[in-house]
Image 1 (cartoon, rainbow, N blue to C red):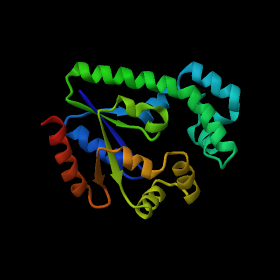
Image 2: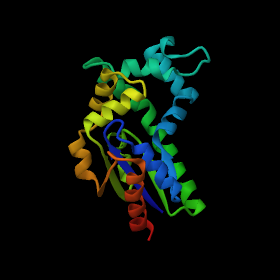
Image 3: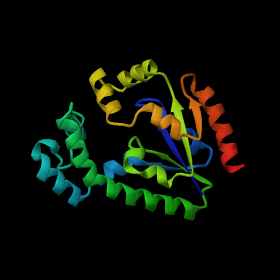
Length: 199
């Protein structure tokens, strides 16, 4: 089974490309979902509470991801230091979850799996991948899309700053998908990519 990793800037449409690959038969390795699941683990919640206290927990006893994001995506020097601490807690557990997902999808007989994880390079998960795709969109378009998600300019800038530069991501990619047009235009490129991957 081939594992395809998706790279791109914030709000570049990696999730759209992932969905389109899944429509064609790929399995999804969802880094965000694995991250959310990690924050539900009792051991992780204990470590989060030790570091940041009750303020980052919601009324239901689960981690309030928005409250935690305000801390870990705060400006330097505080934010990056806190983000690094959170990643030390969650990344090993997310790595194991992704390994388990890869094994399960391979056992199902899937021809390929797609890894959509914003911090793929930082966490070293690109080493799972046989093929890397860079989803390319201008910064202006990405900012508009992020505003449609309810993010402020500051949210966008903080998340962008927490990731590797676009130049680094582009250099590591085996191919580029231009997602600046319509979903149909992206789909045509994704279908060509799929044929090259699975024949």
